[in-house]
Image 1 (tube, rainbow, N blue to C red):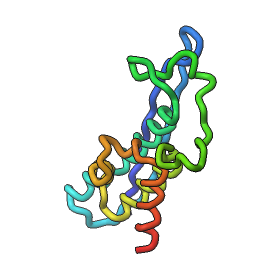
Image 2: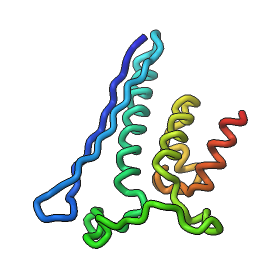
Image 3: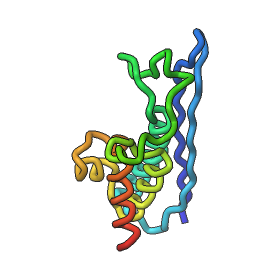
Length: 143
């Protein structure tokens, strides 16, 4: 058995001048022996994508952005974290936990985040709606 450790950190400006917040995720997975170099490289890439996407999802979840991609100053401390009205579930972005679970299921099936995004017509898997993510998770769990 091979062990793979993947981690991703990102530091972003915080609410006050000269301050920042740091986000970090790390995962350790076991890989089977006998993988080819290409299979190993693919598993490394997918695992790193999972960790990076998890950090980015936490950073960008429901937070308005300024022109540089950082949270708008007035939203840094008051960004909404809850769901919108239940009737508008089509508009609600998938949660970071939901995306993390989806990406874990995808990795087990050999599906890349880019393939999921292309299948749903979004530029990045983090832009899936809660409904899209739920439907895909349910279809994979039923299979």
